Length: 99
Image 1 (cartoon, rainbow, N blue to C red):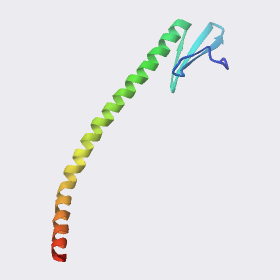
Image 2 (image 1 turned 90 degrees about the horizontal axis):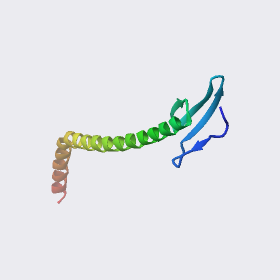
Image 3 (image 1 turned 180 degrees about the vertical axis):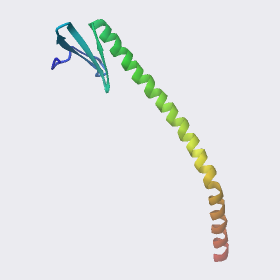
Image 4 (image 1 turned 90 degrees about the vertical axis):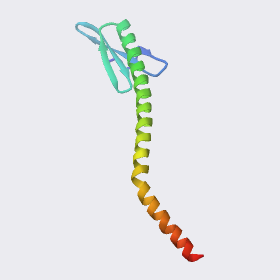
């Protein structure tokens, strides 16, 4: 593999080359995603596709995390409601006795 990338995108993704008996192989690296292509044009297209895939995946993950966070909050509030009411009554009784 070449030590220096032959292409670096604005987002930091890279394309390296491998020289072999059958010709040049292009190694596309986008974070932890890798793909091999037979020509430079295909390598650049795949690099763009992987970068866009990463962006859309991140956006979906954020939306999912927000939705799940709301569901978890509702679940915790529902589960804690009887306990909070019970303790609020006890606190009110203690405050009444102190007065």
